[in-house]
Length: 210
Image (cartoon, rainbow, N blue to C red; front, side, top):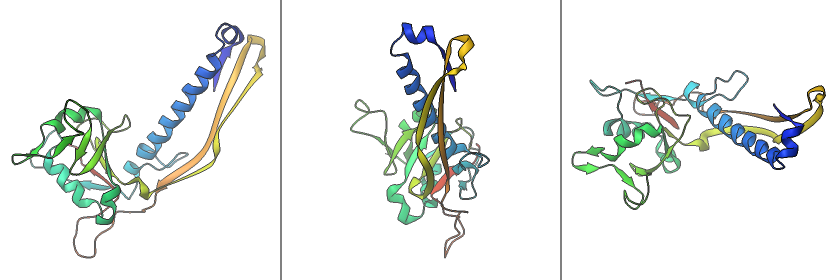
C-alpha cells in the first residue's frame, strides 16, 4: 500500500508509473526472499527452513570462510540426476574467496572468459549467482547449491494493482494497492538417505555455521 498526494501526481506525470515499477520490483524481491528464507507461516516455506535441506559439516578449525572442501562436499550431497540443473547462489562477499580457491595447485573457480571479462563464472562446473537473500558470510546459507526445479510454486493470477481517491480523500492523497496470491515449498519433505550410503542427499545443500 502506498499514498501519493494529488499534487505530486500532477507535478510528476510519470510518478504513478515509477511507483508501480518500484512495487513490482519489491514484490519480486519478497518472493525470492520467501523461497530462500520463508517460514511457511503465512508465506512460502523457504529452503533454509525446510526439512529438505542437507547441511554439510565445516572443516576442522574452519572459521568464517568458504573453502574448496566445502564446495566439493556440497556437490557430493546433490543427487546425481539433479547436478545438471544445480546452481550456486552466494552472498556477494563470498566472491573474493572464490577467486583464490584451489584444490592442490588447480583453481576450481573459473570466471566466464577471464577475470577481465566477467565477475561471475563456474564453480565445479556449475554457474554462480550472487543474491541478496543469501545469509551473512560464515553462516548457514551464505553459499547455497540448489536445483530449483525441485521447488513448487503456486500462483493465483498475477500482481493486481488498483488505486483509489476515496481512502484519503480529505488529505488529497491517492491510495495505491498491490496484491499477489502465491505459495511455495520444496517438492521434497526431507533429505534422502541413499540406497547405499549415509550422507543425506537433497536438491538444496548448505554448509553449517563456521
